[in-house]
Image (cartoon, helix red, strand yellow):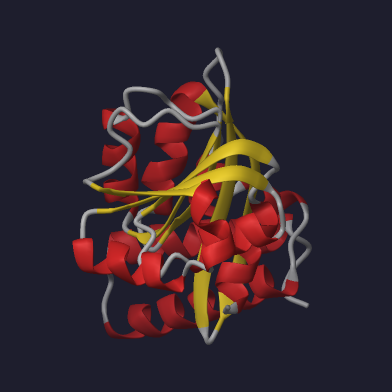
Length: 214
């Protein structure tokens, strides 16, 4: 278990039923069962090879609490909570849009396009937690959201960086801002790209809001 996977397990709330979508090796769902955070887990993956890997990794004593489904996304599977991690944000959005039964709780870790994920969630979910962690030199967005009846209004900075990051910045988030500032500043030395300038402006606003680079 990596820091990223440990954090996913920590963020998943206690629930009756969990779907591990794009489960791959199944480590997250298996650990949830070991910690008794869910009564049952459905492992879902579009790859039968990945499902077979998750099945082999699942201890025998847990086999009566698991199911394995080879399909693309949630489909018509009805669960309290879904964890969708390690894939692109646009793919996560597509999975949510096609779900017949929207899960009450979501734990998401988009590899890219986190801004689009936040905008999609704001339509019918309330983002409770949105924080960045650094694991092995890579930065990952971790998002927890609860289904609600009212749209959520996000500012441009909240869409870009996440509510929790801005309200309670961690050293990992500060490191991300320093890294982005350095990278974007270096790019602008060689060109005058309005998109890069705009991105740098947002980064510097986030730096100011979070109390500067410490």
